[in-house]
Length: 416
Image (cartoon, rainbow, N blue to C red; front, side):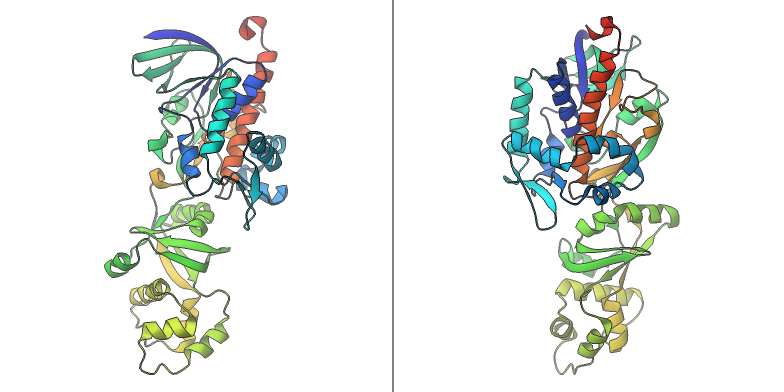
């Protein structure tokens, strides 16, 4: 066992932890960032593989509504570090941003790696130290931080600690949710971690699964109960996922938790009204196959026709024998029974975490003076579209400010 001393310990080298470290270093603090992985920002890099969506350009009131029940809890942090500030921060690192057609904001490089490299260079120049392959395991009897390293157990006496260990999605990238047990043992209230921005399971037939697994449903509209939106989805071996599914994942997850299942309706031609569909479907089929008839008259792709067939078989009906009126109704309300939530390890993010009631206005855990928490460790969730990263950056900055404020009000012996 080795024992060392650090002024401020930041545990977690994702966006929240790195932003906390930056604010602390700018405030004159000496900072060491600890992470269990061999390098920084692994999940951040994964998020940028398809184009790094940093934030969103919509007006702040609509932006904040995306955080649902946690909106008011996150408001102060995001007001202090809003989307415009995040864009300016990125530009200062040499990565200017642009607004895409959907309103989402991306770096012009469209990648996470150049931004992360520039950020790490700036942190290094500010004196921030990094200690990788340090897995946090809690505190010892003297309140010192304990880490498991390649060389055994390391003990760190920190003046203040920032916890930014993420949620429990993509655990192979470092966020495995193991911290929940450590904090629960300290009496901290934690909402169970659950999948967010995730897929759902459906009992596809072998024929449908083998033919359409991995294929997209484009230009569709999804609805269940009062909820609905347009977008795209992807058929998976176990069920369905994709952007539109992720946007509804919180409501779908809650419905399945309450009822055991939920029926999601898919409109395959949402821009064509029912009367027009009936007219088209009433045309003579002639000698063409039924699939060709659907393709030509209703402009349905093979996967859309397959989904219709799947629904008809499930209902014990013959799709080709349906009258035009019933077929038109089905085309814009194909029912898919979702029976479960995909594993959290495959989710883009996680819901749940440290209750905001456990935190003071500076994001310090009240029961653990000098210990602060940020990012996905807190009890909030948001859809994809830039909202996840924005809240992670903003809460990281808020924690940095909170630590500096706490140290400034502490006895001189603690600040030394």
